[in-house]
Image 1 (cartoon, rainbow, N blue to C red):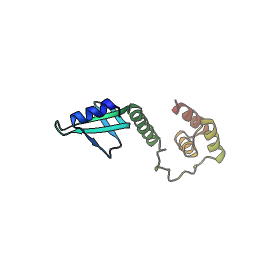
Image 2: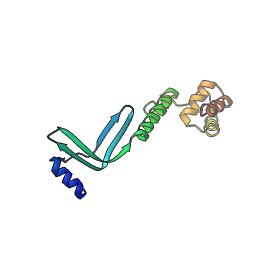
Image 3: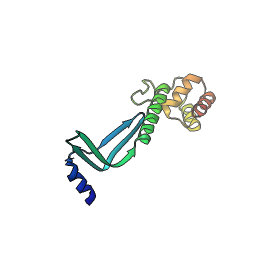
Image 4: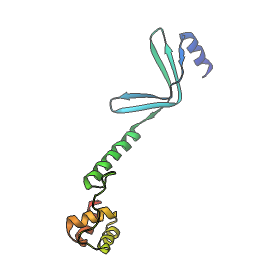
Length: 135
């Protein structure tokens, strides 16, 4: 703390608050966090807090959270969400070569290739579905 800040703290009789690692401010949809250089003082006369430090916008973290929720939702709709493994991943009526062809040409997992083969009925349509679903 600078000398002028020290004298201001003394003059206003502010009490330093210890043991706080992070402060979050929410204003509408915007969220700001202060955890670097965090200094908190309490003014007993006005019963208010003075918070100082480097504010960081949490919009990026919020956007990432929304993106992850969207991706999980899409995975759940396609049957690929974690914890939703297919109970019978064996291809019925399709050879291992068919599954491999869809995996390689469609750039999908084995479970996804099998699902596409079951839905479309043949390798060509499964590959087409895999490549058009990615767009």
